[in-house]
Image 1 (cartoon, rainbow, N blue to C red):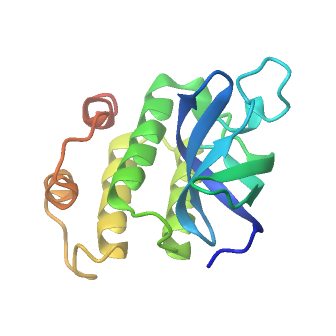
Image 2 (image 1 turned 90 degrees about the vertical axis):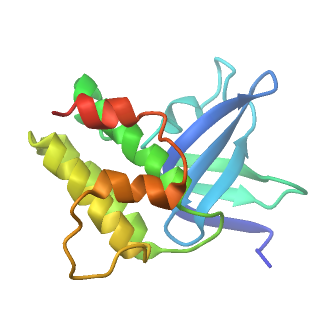
Amino acid sequence: MKPHSYSSEGIVLSRRNFGEADRILSLFTKHNGRISLIAKGVRRPASRKRGHIEVFNLVKFQAVSGNGIDIMTEVEVMEDFSLIRKSLKKISLAYYFMEVVGKITHEHETNIELFNLIFDTLTKLKITKKLQNLRLDFISKLLILMGYWPHGQILPNPDEELEKVIERQINSVRVGKRMVQ
């Protein structure tokens, strides 16, 4: 059972509007795995949380357990990856990574190694020019880490194996593959 109030670090995987002024966020956290939170009132112009919950930001947050979905009460940005946001190809690839993580993971499955892989990959994305190699390396490490491919064996086609695992098409696959070549 979750405590009534908790805090952690997390990377924002996705967000979607909810109601008039709220957003539902999907985060991959260091201690709780992938979770969904509702951020009340963040779409209002006066909201102080508004700029902190952008996709692929690393945030430190506090939340309280709700009846259905937990509610984010505090948030601050630890890393906004602003260098990624200056390049269309890099930002597209970052969105691709977030979508893949969101589809391959389940709610509340803690995996600190996966959290570190996501953070390290986004950090490398800030400075690398070899985007195709970074994308394939991320997919390979992700599949091995999640137990879908044996450690130590070469993965001949990471994209094909990923599609088999998640059993559906990645929406940003066109961006993930073609924009970085």
